[in-house]
Image (cartoon, rainbow, N blue to C red; front, top):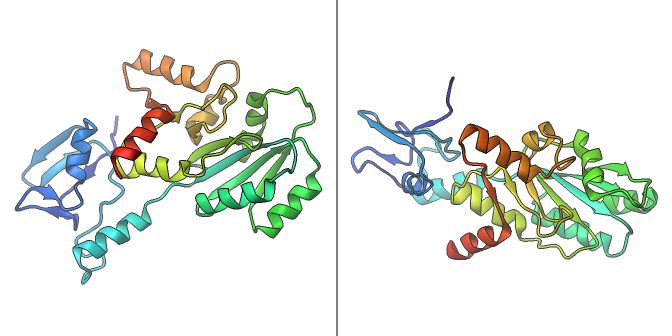
Length: 247
């Protein structure tokens, strides 16, 4: 079976004389226990490096400028699922989420309030959104999220309950954890039992029907157990500690 990987040879950040990466990524992949094989052309890493650029990429820029530019080109994207009961403070919440996500995420709004005020808010804030009406006030958050899955974009899903306190730094934290510290992440567990602030890889979450019937976390653990692989599941304590240590 074909495997994805990265050839460092001919990358503008790879120094063949010193056999290292000026971006520090070989060391970072080593810390993440990636398999690195060395040959005459340099290292071959069994992970996809999103920062690999050809030697003639932006020729004439300094190394520092190239590093800065490559980091600006690597970012998170996907969908934000919002569970909304009423419009209290909703304009402020939507505005902060849009800014925190840098307008790279699609909003999917599961609402139990009237649609009109929601449309006015999203139009005023220029937010692209899909709306899913939740008619049953007693329906579970898991079912509400499941009903939103057909609207997902590829990337990550961030789930928020708008009646709860939201950490707007979560996008930057996940970006730091995945794109700077190079952790492979399929799922970050919610801070409560109702999916609030859970983060999941969209295509796998959708394929496994999310948290219906059994939690997505348990589904990943079961698959990993069968395959003797890493389930790639984390919690916010781990994410926050890693971000603090990397500041």
